[in-house]
Length: 154
Image (cartoon, rainbow, N blue to C red; front, side, top):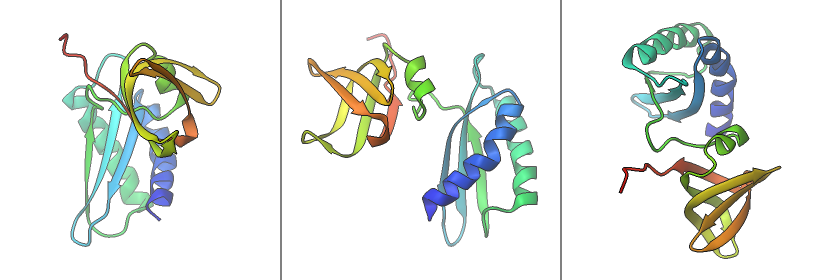
């Protein structure tokens, strides 16, 4: 049910966000009987400032008021994806080749679900990651979560 709601929200909101010149990176929805939370992460090649989040929030709020895809009360938050940006699409993985990432698969692959290492590439529907001195080729469809690991110049 939540996944269907997220898919519907994504389909509704992505054209608005991209039409404003931003990339919709992630949509999170946490329903609650009292007050739910809808959180959008946006990005832009020049970065994201507070005014950008405010502009997107205003546009999205107007659309949500008209379409009313979420029953009840909820808060809307719009923010940048941060240094630990989520990776969802093939284009995300391609953009960050060479970076350190953390991946979690939905089910164990060769007895393992968690991977942290250097993103080496994308080949068709597989993500190539090097971690613990080994090469792994993970089907994109098997990846439950993926994020960049911030580099603080250590």
